[in-house]
Image (tube, rainbow over all chains, first blue to last red; front, side):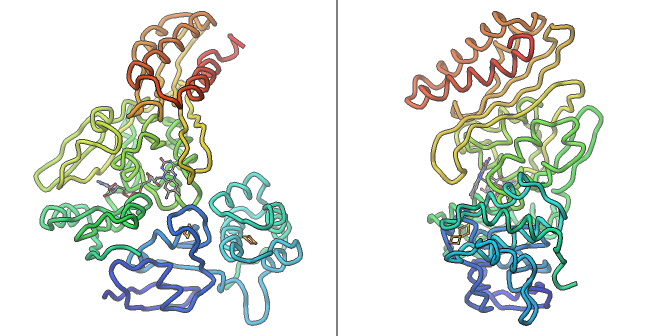
Length: 158
Length: 282
Ligand SMILES: Cc1cc2nc3c(=O)[nH]c(=O)nc-3n(C[C@H](O)[C@H](O)[C@H](O)COP(=O)(O)OP(=O)(O)OC[C@H]3O[C@@H](n4cnc5c(N)ncnc54)[C@H](O)[C@@H]3O)c2cc1C
Ligand code: FES
Ligand code: FES
């Protein structure tokens, strides 16, 4: 076992994990963050995406020991109490959520993009989403949702 | 799930070199996008040494005539680096084409080269820049040309106790350079190909032509005969067509005839014709 300390959704977190443990499993099984999904497990579907220091990474290919001292965000970070983040509201109003399996990760890549580009082009949105599969929506609704959230985008947690 | 191992985080290059020399059965971990996928499929190691904390492996230095790029640089950082974009643009383009944003945020140049897949995107542009890799162990340091370092698909000359610390690439000012790849979605195991180039021409005459072809041969390669043939010649259609034929012949000579060539070779031909031909031949 190994003790790992990192910031999870703005809170200092310490956790004892196996040395070969993946961040995906630590989040889901030890920290009850079930929004991070296990799809393919080998870096191809994107459903396990988390933000590490604000950059999208696959939790299925990240050892938990590797996030020592880093800042990890999951979709739980976006909403406050009962209030959804404008990006989440936008996903709902655009019908960008169907089965919902890809949604937490899609929200995170959208959030990370909007942190860097307040007015992203369609091309930038498509590029940002290119590591995430959605089997339901056909993507167009997600692109529109991210684009329309841009003007009301607020940095969650600040 | 991953097979069990002891995880070791190092905080400097020196610590990494010492750990690697003293621990039998250790694997180096950079971004993990190749290593952990292999380990999920059953590859085992007694120790995994995480290089992320070795700050010396990161960063880019302009050494006047060459750029030294740390092996720990991620594809995302290479793609966004101003000095690399300016004098090593083909590499910036190639790293920006790797996998997905997540893979680019995690995967490193060192991992890409040591893994040495025939389809590794950084290899072809680095060949165009006559790249030399630096390998270090506790016993010392050595440099090797990239084209010698990679000896076959997934094979390199790296020693058991060596770390690839940096890559040095010629800066090419005044060249028109780039990278193109033809790929299906990264995850699909379907053949693809790539082309890196850097051209220096003036008044319709080729001065220096550098080409590297990836994914057609066991190791990405420079078609030297065709490059030499073009040097000093006019940028004209018949000249370019002759050079393209030389490249295709060389691919067939190296790899023999493969079923995938029915689709790959015409694509290589068309890419080369448009890159070498430029406006003068269209
Ligand atoms: C979904 C997906 C898509 C991908 N798409 C592409 C693509 O489009 N193009 C492409 O080229 N690659 C692609 N890859 C492969 C991979 O992402 C790259 O090869 C990447 O650059 C590997 O770097 P890494 O830091 O993750 O290496 P790791 O997995 O950490 O290491 C790879 C190997 O190199 C060794 N190693 C790492 N660093 C060093 C060092 N400094 N010195 C000595 N040995 C070292 C490790 O021990 C290991 O054997 C993809 C991978 C995935 C999972
Ligand atoms: S579960 Fe990580 S990318 Fe599919
Ligand atoms: S909403 Fe079902 S996979 Fe995207």
